[in-house]
Picture 1 (cartoon, one colour):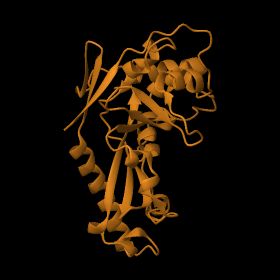
Picture 2 (cartoon, helix red, strand yellow):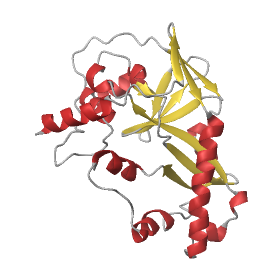
Picture 3 (cartoon, one colour):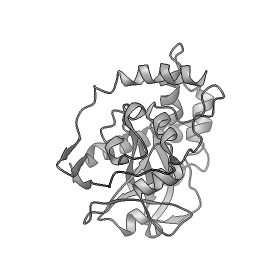
Picture 4 (cartoon, one colour):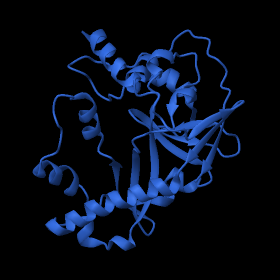
Length: 263
């Protein structure tokens, strides 16, 4: 049953792998990533503005819209990348995971951090991951949040959390580096500007790990393949996201220097 589901998903998503627009490319051993900062920022601003305005219109008590003016808020966008569709067929533990990260996301996923002064008020993931997943996989139905679900899940959660200073955040302390998330995988990934190397920062460890070491030891090949299909939880009771670490392998050397170009 699980194999049938995987084959169906692979067929559906692999057909989309050739319709990407190019925002990353390789020259010799350098992987160039074009990050459209203004584009991400505009999407973040527009998304938060819609939520802010609707929350204010509905009069949600203790919401961010009732305590702060929109123009006084700042937003920090951190992109969330997925894996290329062909990872299901081509990725193996031996290979460099950087070759399989889709820096050309058609759907612009991002974590938007809402800031007032030097305090983080809250954060949102846009667009809504559950909605996008349902659209992809529930092909026979139109998926949408009811008004009550929308208000409960989004508007009522659009409020100030326990105060967090941005000065404690890694992305604030190391502004010269580039940060991103990978959909379905724990950790904040960091591209060092000078060395071009990529590391992962984990909440439970003070030490950074090289990205390939982390993927091989803590994530595993099977999970990468499943995530590349675009599904981030179990399918019909099949545990597709179990960690199957890469054991007894002789990996290819990590050969990429990652250079981020801001546009």
